[in-house]
Image (cartoon, rainbow, N blue to C red; front, side, top):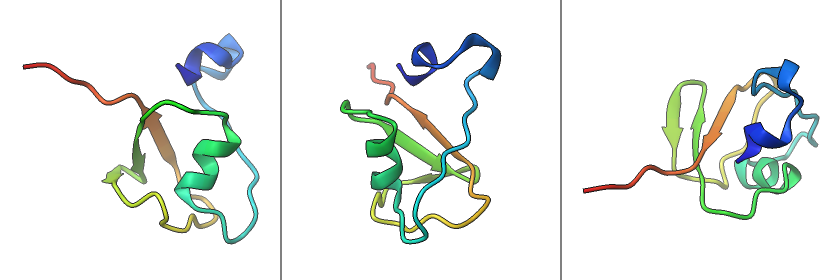
Length: 68
């Protein structure tokens, strides 16, 4: 998904500059992601996309896995 849109040498990593009051939802929108995703923030899954981001936060965004 997102990784395919990044240059190969980034190895799936990207630094994004956002306004101070930006939220996880703002980050997802800034990346142009329009499909449902799961976000891990600093190693912890965060379900509240209205959570404000702080300087230095590390987010991992991925599509939810399903199965059964």
